[in-house]
Image (cartoon, rainbow, N blue to C red; front, side):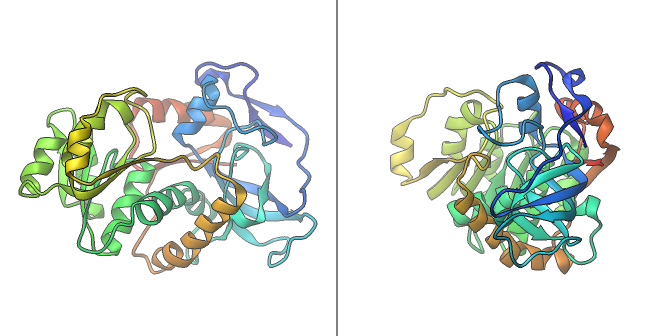
Length: 325
């Protein structure tokens, strides 16, 4: 088969479409013939050599895919060759075929194409696990989503609104904020022109937000905590703004707040399976009813993955960039 390899780390040009061995399913795995995958920031970091896949996993980038089951490994039940599926991956989506643990498979939602389905697993699993399983966002609460126009951000807006929460977002342009508003965002912050902590303070009457989903890390740490309500929960899932920051612990203690750091990719299989089960139970019905929709900026051939990486690095997209195999 062919896959997008990384012979040496570097810029987008480091991605090389090459012949590689076909995968064989291990115990509890299936082989999926990939119809489409989607680009995530972790793919860019892997290409740069700073976020390698876990030992023993596929060396190719790609944290999600959609396609058809091509082979079943020992011990697999409940799925059949030919089933249309999408899947959360630890790596390997930028290939014609990929091994998938059975607990990370999802049926393609009714009414969606394989390309649309490929845009869902990583964002849905990230948002469900962090905003709902970890931060326990409840109806009537307010969540602040940094990077509201990203794949994760657009999913977070829709899911939070679906349960009856209020949503504040940050984004870098009027156009992106307008798209966030279309998806249901209530409070819009242009981070290039406004201080999100000040906007949140004004929008909440000084009360703050109950949950923050943060991709920036150190750069936003203190302002995020300043923006929390009493008993607020800050969930940090990215470090685009650095890894070391200072925090006034007095503010944290006074608010009885929590700062939580999580990552999806290195979690054990059992934890990922539990997350995927939650996505199937709670998110998939919303997708199939049209309440939640995949937001796709563009679809490119998998052989043009380098261009897709350039788009993501430039921050030009709203929602997901999908790669058609």
